[in-house]
Length: 151
Ligand SMILES: Nc1ncnc2c1ncn2[C@@H]1O[C@H](COP(=O)(O)OP(=O)(O)O)[C@@H](O)[C@H]1O
Ligand SMILES: [Mg+2]
Image (cartoon, rainbow, N blue to C red):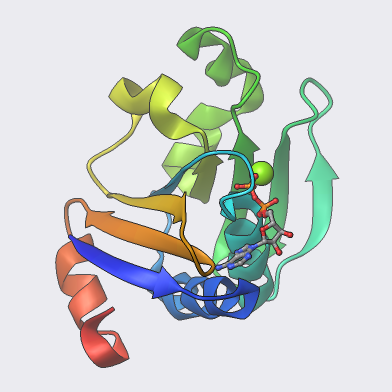
C-alpha cells in the first residue's frame, strides 16, 4: 500500500499513463473516491495511454464504455447510480472481467464480485490537488515495484 500526492490533474494523468502498460486482460482497477476526486480523469488518461479509441456506448446502460486499445478492450464503468450489485451483469461485467481490462468508478457496490487481480486506487481531495492510496491485489504488488520509483 502506498500513498502518493497528485498535486494537479497532470499528476493524475501521469500516474494513469504509468500504470496502463502494466495492466493485462482480466485486471480490474477500482477507482474509489468522492465526486470530483479524479476517477474519470484517471480512467480517460489510462485509456488514452493505451491508444484507446472507438468508444462503443452500451445499448443498455449509459455508464459503461468499451474502448478498443492495443492491450485489448478496456471497459470503463461508472457504478455511481447502480442500485443493486446484480444489475452490473447487465452492463457486460462478465465479458469485461473475462477478456478485458476493467476500470470501475464506485466499485464498492460490487466489491464481492471483483477478482483478486485488482488494483484499488483510493483518491481523496487534499489541500493541494489530490492524494491516492494504491492497494495492490494478487500480482499487482510486484508489478508496481517494476515501475520506475516503485510507485
Ligand atoms: N490531482 C488533481 N489535482 C487537482 N485537480 C484534479 C486532479 N485530478 C483531477 N482533477 C480535476 O478534478 C475535476 C473532477 O475530476 P473527475 O475526474 O471528473 O472526478 P470524478 O470522476 O472522481 O468525479 C476535473 O476538473 C479534474 O481536472
Ligand atoms: Mg467520474
